[in-house]
Image (cartoon, rainbow over all chains, first blue to last red; front, side):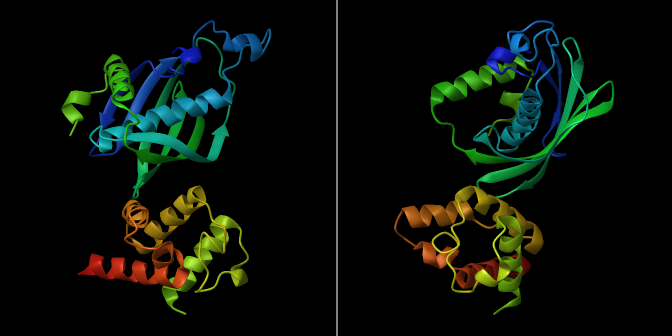
Length: 156
Length: 93
């Protein structure tokens, strides 16, 4: 997890396109400039970044279900809940699935867990659009490889 | 007024917090009801779920952009309801 670079996930440990499910893991870093402000002398993982973890988790599934031919962009969030405080060093899991694939948009859900207990959840809507440029697509696929996303296997 | 229009109007009223009595068959979703594209995603999601269809928003947008269709054809609510009825019929065919 590199919070400053919005690299929220350490690894995609399961991605099942047919069953429409994805599971990712990450560990909140012990130190980050984020914690200098959130909060001084009380480092706490921001809820906004937990939401980003959820958006990225289900986002990989949305992308995989297009055969990595399109990019999901965050469009709307509903029923976002943050149930408990998350601290540096906490190991987290995120589980996502797709609720509905519409024309040019997808609605999914995701929840975060710490030691099997749900710590956050949300319903997330993505606009699913062509990649804005080839360089962006290449950089994203390189990130996918580092996260163990089977891009080559699942690409159209 | 058709049953489809009534359901669509109910969805719009609930999704966009528009008084139900202001939503009429001749209302244009964008021009009259001022529904933006993000709110229309919510409406499309609710329509897709309610009727078990997939409203082809991308195709409609492309046709409008290419000048092959007008927004009236898809976003005036009695026309939208007719399009939904066609999609339901096509699903059952």
